[in-house]
Structures are given as C-alpha cells and as structure tokens.
Image (cartoon, rainbow, N blue to C red; front, side, top):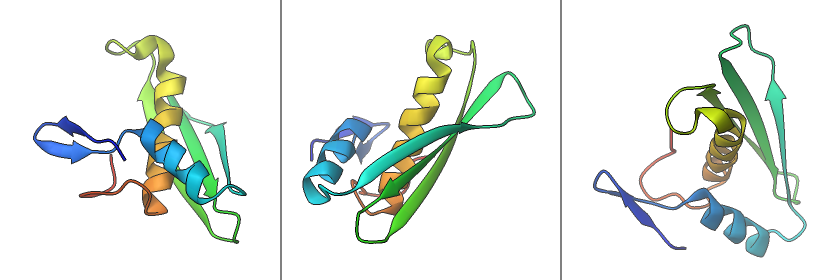
Amino acid sequence: MRTINIKGKEYVPVVERVKEFHKLFPKGSIETWMTSSSNESRCIVQAKVKLGDGREFTGLSQSEWGKGLMGGVALEVAETSAIGRALGFANIGLIDGIAS
C-alpha cells in the first residue's frame, strides 16, 4: 500500500486501506452512520467494517463544523476518519499505531 509522510511518520491513507480491504475481503462491507451528539457544533460518525467471516471492527470519529479548512465538510472528514480507524483495528494499513 502507498504511504505518505506526516510529521516524520509513514501513514497509509484511508483510500489505500479501503482498496486493500476490498481486495482482501470481497464479501466484506463497510457501514457508517452519524451518531447523536449533545453538541451541535460537532458531528460524530461510527463506522463498522465487516470482514465477511463473522469478524467486525468499529471506529468512531468526530469533527467540528466550520473549523479550519475542512469545516464545511466535517461530516465527510469524520466519516473517512472513522472508516480508517475501523480498518486499522482490523489490521489493515497499520504501520505504527491507530490514527487518532
């Protein structure tokens, strides 16, 4: 899988993890949903990766609306991060740890 360097550490982008997941687990699936939040300035997304063999891995992520360059797409940012975390827990694309 292709890696990029972030602050001196190699990292496998989520797009590469997703491609590898579909190659390794053609009967697997990725599901995402927005969870409720008591704070309307943030969105929280949960992702579930099902490998198709009975194993499932979950990742959560949150993002803040209107903050930084990606504030207008906070939901998409949180969803991508949640998927990346779930895939990491499934040991797909790990190098040095689970992204936070």
